[in-house]
Length: 500
Length: 130
Image (cartoon, rainbow over all chains, first blue to last red):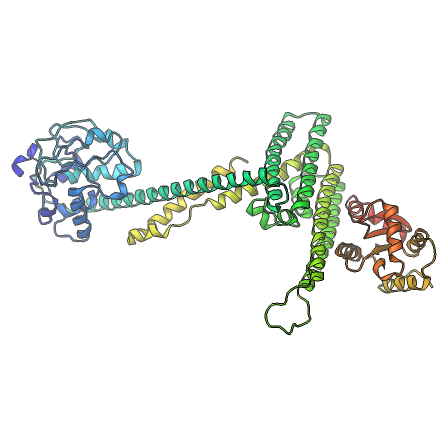
């Protein structure tokens, strides 16, 4: 085997598995120091660290298993995890010829993949591989690069069949066959390289797995959405309105249209303020925005006749909005409180008026909440009569009770209407209290706030969850993956919020 | 018999006074008479939750309204019909009179409160002293 080696470099004649005891230290140093070494083997190994260790630090068994695995994989093919990343990796081994000729065509296929095929034939001609490495995934290539230089040597291969030479061939580090003894510094450096290579491999694996799972999730979600949409359309169009859910769906569609209108109004107001329009023009914009809100309240009222629960429960809102919902919408006092902070500078008189508006709104909200509470109590009382029944089991509710309960539920619509009325009155009063420019900013602040809540909802729903399965893969790499995952999250959030 | 009290007892006193007045008389006149007896008069129905809400609104502001429960009044139905004619809507309770003048139902009262006209009205009628 050794005789077949080209370039007579490392003299690593045996293939990996049998070289555990072997100590071909030769090429290693050259690999580090002479990047332009001619001995470029087209090594498609990906576990350089392990190989290197096996070869260089003979007898160090820290990663023996891994090495054995790697070596066997090396022989038999690539591990599945990285297959998808580099689909261009051809399997170029012939298991039979261990040390025999391995077609080294990996270089030409993997034009952009740093880790080439596992052909281990030493290269015939010197080809600089540096550039090729740079083109690969950056976190990986740099480490692999160094690793490869050392890895190649030990890998015994057939040299003769080295074809090609594409400039993408990995540079096989110094496969000079000088057999220098390893010194401590080199050992340390090698160990560090190994570590770095391993870490970057693990990171890559984690990232790939995350991408894959996200992709699956995305396709699933899309299918669900399509299914739901098709069902929804059927219900919306086919239902004669007697179906309660169809009314809710119809409202959802109208709300969707309202949201688009909202964006348009926001854009108008923003441009109006920035462009410094006159008060009269701004007033037109603000009034149309006001009518926009009134339209929403009107549509809600209509939909409540069909399905009051849908509106009051806030099924049509985003989850974050729904969490803080008050009788099917926003709480005017909260909005006013938020505006007081955002609208500075305000005249003294205006501040007083805003605080008093907030106070009145709070009183009205409290009154409505207590009325609703009373409704709840009387409903409970109606559907759970105090009289014990002689018959065991849940007592059937008498017709009278049922009718009474239903008529009580009808009051829900009235409360929703009063709550929306309160919201509308608050907005109108705001417009009266403030200058037209301040009122325009109010609408912007409110619109932005709810748009952010909606974005927050979708962000929350799509946040990458810590995947425990990834952590189980490599027990000693769990810290690595978790930090990587956290690394991805902030970027995602910044993107969403930078829109505002 | 009828006296203005700004205390909790006004509620009870008002309904007792209703019973004492008797069934006779034009309902509208009765309404007007009842409305002018106290600073704040609310016509309500005991089982209505919206009426409960409006009562809590006034009590929360420190006002003690005189409440007439139409379902506890013998001629409550007549009064209700008269109120419907007066207001023009079918959902007539709760309806509020301040200082003898009609303010309206819940949404009118809320609108007045939000636009800041309710409190001056109450002060003017002597129901609020702050």
